[in-house]
Amino acid sequence: MKPILFFVGIIFCSISIFFCIIYLNLLTIGYSFLEYVKFINTRLECLLFYIGVIFIIVSLERKIKNEFLLRNKIKF
Image (cartoon, rainbow, N blue to C red; front, side):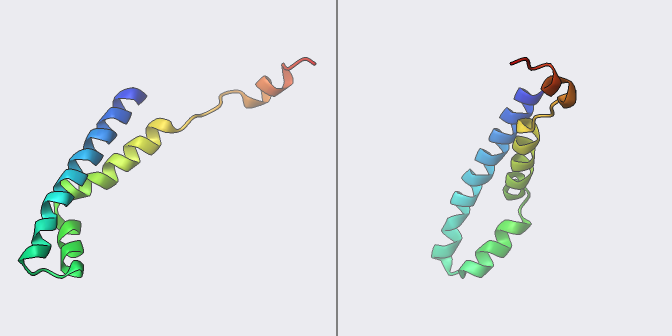
């Protein structure tokens, strides 16, 4: 499940960055940088970046089960 979540997160991030780069053409039309940032924050395909980052973070988390037992089983 975690590798699938990781790849979906990568895909969401790449799609989002792709559209953010495409929308940079708005700056040549006459939009200011602040208007560009406001526009990017309202577009769904650009908001996928945040969802993708959350998916990647969740997929990379590791939980140690029985951490206490693992520490006590070490013999020197």
